[in-house]
Structure formats: C-alpha cells, structure tokens
Length: 403
Image 1 (spheres, rainbow, N blue to C red):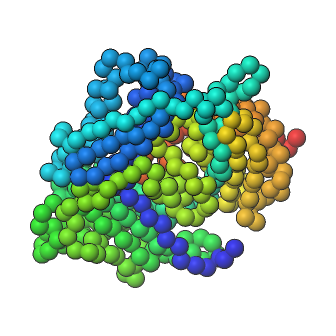
Image 2: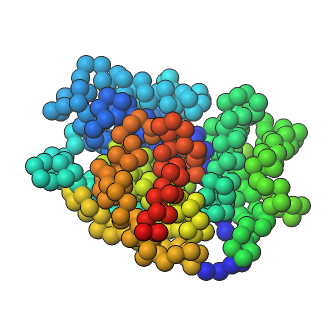
Image 3: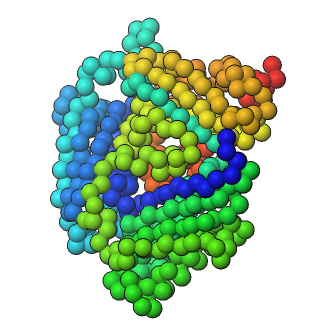
C-alpha cells in the first residue's frame, strides 16, 4: 500500500435527484415491511420535472396478493411518496410534493424468482439473487469510515439540518460535496481541496449574498473537519459553476441506485455493484453488504486490524454463501485466514445465510428510509436503526480467535 497520497470522496444531499429516488424507494420498502415483515419488495423510482414514477415487483400480505391491490393501498403508496418529498423540502414550480404527477407501476414478483428464494420442505430460504458484496472499515475516523467520505457526508448533513431549522434560509435541497485529503504514512494530515455546490435562493450568486453563502459553507466545513486538517492552503470551490437555482429532479432526472459509491465507502473500498435502496432484506445486495460492514467494523473495533475488507458471494436460491474473504491489508494482528475461520464459527451469525443475517441484525423492520441519504455506513445505531453499525461482536471475535 502507498503511504503518501491524495484521496478524494464525494457525497450528495437528500435533495439530489438520485437521492430523492432512493428515499422514495425506501419509503415504499418501509411501508410494505410495516404491513408484512416477510414482504418482498424491489422498487425502482424515476424522478424528473414534476413527475415521479414507481416500477418494480412486490409481494405483501394484505396489501398486494394475487395481482390485486387491497382497498386504499395505492392511495397509501402515493401518500407515502408525497410525504417523503415534502420532508426533503421540495415546494418549487419544477418539483412540488403536492402537485407532481405520480405513476405506480409496481406489479407481482416473478414466481420463478420466488420459488428459488422461499423456504420449502428441507430447503432453507435462498438468496434473492447472485452477486458479490463487500464491507469495509478503517480507523481514520471515530465512525471507522474513510475520512474523505465521512467528512463529505457530514458537511451536507449539517447544511440540511440548518436548512430544515430555518437558520440557513438561502439553501435549497439539492447539494453536492467533495473532500480531498493528503495522507502521510496512511493517515490524513491535511485537507487540500473542498468542493461544495448547493442549490440556493435567487440572488445568492453575486455580491454580498454570494459572499454570505460562501462564508456560511466555510463555517460548516470548519465545524465538521478537525481543525488540524484545515489551513490557509486549503482550496475551496463553492458553487464553481456560478448560479445553482434550478436543482433537484427539475434540473436533472433521478433514478434509484445511481449513487452506490456515495452510499458505501467513497471509492476507498471495492463495491460489488448492487444498489441497496428499494430492496427488502432477502436481497443480499442489501443484507450481505450490511453484514460485511458489521463484520469489518467489529474487526477494526476489536483491534484486530486498522483496515479490513470483507467479501461474501451468493448464488440465487442457495442459502449458504459461496465464499468468505477477509483482507486486513497488512494491518492485522492475526492472520486473515484465522479471522475467516473465527467468523465462520460464530453461531449467532447463522452461517451468514440470508435468513441468518436478517435474524441477527433484525432487518425485517421498516428501518430503511433514513439510510437513503448521507450514507448507509458510519451512522449512529439508535433503537432499531443502523444495527449493522453496532460493535457488539467484538467479544465473540476475540473468544473465537482465542479458542
């Protein structure tokens, strides 16, 4: 591994058109799981100027069975979609929560997919699709996340909080951030460049109002990043294109699942290619990515490594993972294959089958809409939310390695 380098990650706000789509899709996941914890959902969302379109496959007891909607179900879906957009804050002529056109094209899940996933007889529940999933953790931040991504998320989350609180009334929902850090001996030592583009109220692209917006963004950066990373040499690019009044789905179409690097590790770790939002936890694209993050985070939290990448692989309809791979990038205090053996021997993980993962992390709950902006990882576990961020496997790992 190189020890001295520049590295950059980006984030996008809850008002970014792709993130609007992700949050809508996950609001549908939550709606159906609240009705039926065993519901199957694959919901894709398209957003554009004054239009939201849902497409995908579902199965949900009491809501959608045998190809028929229960009374009032479609109205409830539309209400959930509009409420999601309202919470984000879109009340603009080009995209308004109350007046956009809405299309619901959800339909029944394929019976041929269902038969591979459903448990029957002696067959355990299988994975909802084939694929490879990666998890990652490192000691660059207290959240055990890559610093460039962690700070990119936190800049935008702080700006959104100020916008919702009314303390930054010139901000509109759409925004992007990017943080470049210089690393020496593998540790972040300086922020060399900060990029923030934010949708704004009219007039905040010149003169005193532009200066007010720029000073505000710099104050947020100063609050989010450790002071020793910032200096007079830090380069700022704030709304570098000039005006940014037209944003969100009115400025660019949005689709579910187009920000998978923002959702995970900001490019600091591999990605298997599968998106998360809109999918129930039988889909290992989502649940296995969560368990690999959980395992990697606990390995780093246990002091077994400073960096850890984990991969799992599955075949559709097959319950057991095809492979488990651990790489501590030369930072481990024990051999990587010993960690693999330890993980495989921890009974509470249920053999890392789809059902075992869902049971251990309690994933069959309506907990997903909050994941759909500012990253699925590096978040604070609170109540039922973000259980894959807990570090409650540390003692089990140490005990398994000591056996």
